[in-house]
Length: 263
Image (cartoon, rainbow, N blue to C red; front, side, top):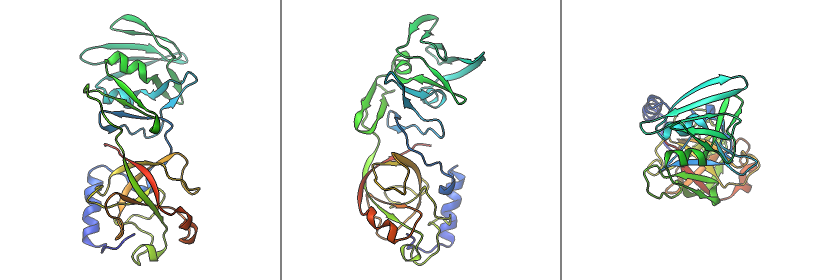
């Protein structure tokens, strides 16, 4: 969806994004999230291991990514097939052992509703236990499978916006006559989206869901806003999908949810 000249301007934008530590869209990990977690107004990005609902319908979250947002330092030690985890901040010390329903807060024993888990090198902890131990209210948005931790004590809304979405291919007719590259000079690939830069800055990392198309990951996916388009204005987003222009015609115009992930 390239309507603009890709010369020095494109190079300048690319260097700015790379300096900010963003990845190119073709290296982005596209995967759905069963459960999402938001702290105040920021959605947490889980780069590999994802939160999930366990057999007790409790939200289990990868330990490090959430506790860092809550201001804890993490220390862990392997004990046989289990992991002992100690979390500390300026107010509390929390200790727990994976696979166990017992934990301690400031050396006082507490009982968990469901045990923490150790899977594929990651420790997962019940989110409700973390929020209770930290004294942080948590609310649940069932429409988005989103848990919101109100760290500042204020109530926060789900951090997404509803956009209209279309789809485009690598066909030159859809790219201003250019080849299969985005506005920043990267090859078009799954994870590329075109945006209005006045609404979503180029280089932004996003999570999108709510679309319906066989050529896209089920549930949702991480994407990078690295392309633009002459018809992409306001709350509208264009998703690159590998395939022919004709094969994408059935996508039409869809309503999707767009989460802007803080880096």
